[in-house]
Image (cartoon, rainbow, N blue to C red; front, side, top):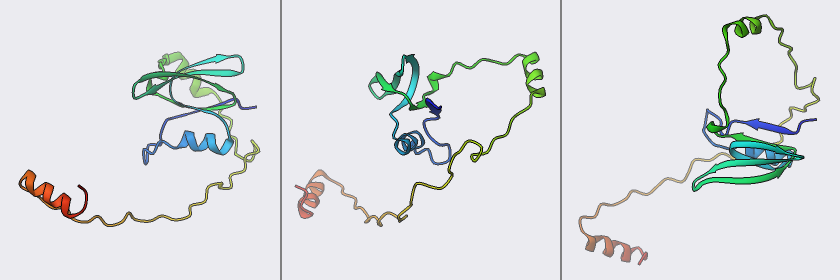
Length: 140
């Protein structure tokens, strides 16, 4: 039984910051994004997350999806003996089918369109010209 999915905050290909949120939505699980600390408290997670104004602490039920901030990881460096041991270990390969996972897409792309063509701007030399142009187009 899976209780927590931890992912990067965004994909490296398009930097869209949607993988964790989409996963949580598709599973109907709560989410904690940009987590810099995670604490297990019974059947809940206390997540300290990075926001524009600093840090925010939230408590969410499990199962949950967490996206990690850089501060979540404090890397450990492998020793040479452990690297040598790891090279000898067998890696078990599993397929989605082995795990009972249906790989059929649950997201349907309805359309992809180019944004509308932008109109060319104008240059104004003075404040008076700017005010006159804004009046002309009905902005003031």
